[in-house]
Length: 117
Image (cartoon, rainbow, N blue to C red; front, side, top):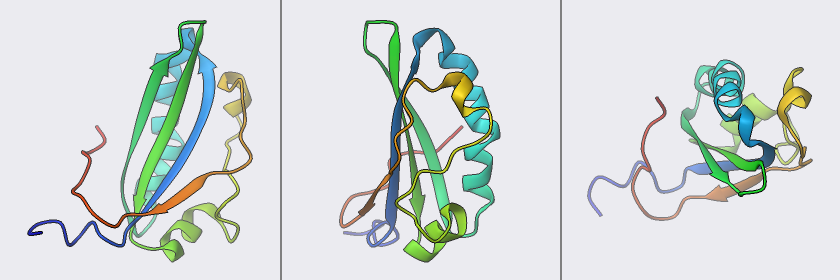
């Protein structure tokens, strides 16, 4: 498929947790200045997105999706144990859950999902 060769073989890193719905905007801004900045400053990163889904009980599921050219590029961001989630000092202020692990998926088909703003 024309125009999609640059996507195939890339790695998607996915992390998800729960926050208070009232913290949506503050958490978005916090991640933009921590994880988002670190993602985009790491060679081999091809962008990230953050998604949020209100659960209707005062909590919101948040997920960060980041795209990488290789597992070695992920290691440059995450450290040798790429399956272990990376956290920042102020995360406990926002997070209701703190998953120990992240997921990695090899992209095998499709086009780019969008860009971070």
